Image (tube, rainbow, N blue to C red; front, side, top):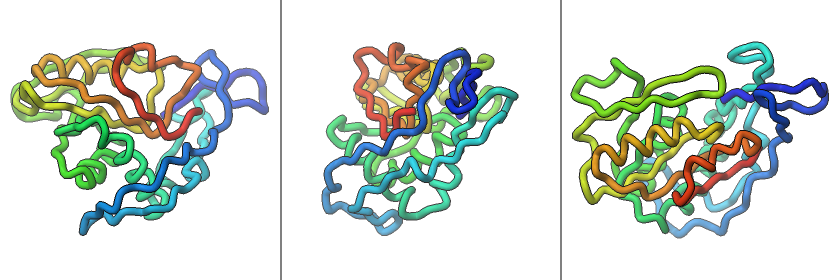
Length: 215
């Protein structure tokens, strides 16, 4: 996810607003003794901010991109993220996870396995084969549309939104619309990072929100 730099050479910032260096990961209490044959529980909490790489001028000049590939490459860091998201999600009692392509899939798949619930992929137009609901939204540097199969969720489902970054909130808000079009309920949102200066959480008022890192 990108974030535009300002004119201060020592301070990365985003799209006309100031940003701060990554804060330390929030330390949550140890996870319950629940494990999966695929994703064993990592009880120790790590400073996962050390695994987020800053890439300037990507994907556009003036954008500071937060690259999570080093985190994904570390079984310990990736496991710790999954543990922390699972701890935050359990009290929300989700019955299904809803996640957007592409990085949202990477976090949502192991989390769904850890929680023992299903995963609904949210994709761009033309990527899903059956009838879809759609919702458009604005990005920090453009606009987009998200789609979800009409039969993916049903009344009574409690959908948990999972993604890597909460920036302007447009992506999350579009997923809220898709969930509500299906007649399902929104259990809450779990995000790896939040770009605080962009104030995306204002679009999620009244929705439980868990964030591991604040940028």
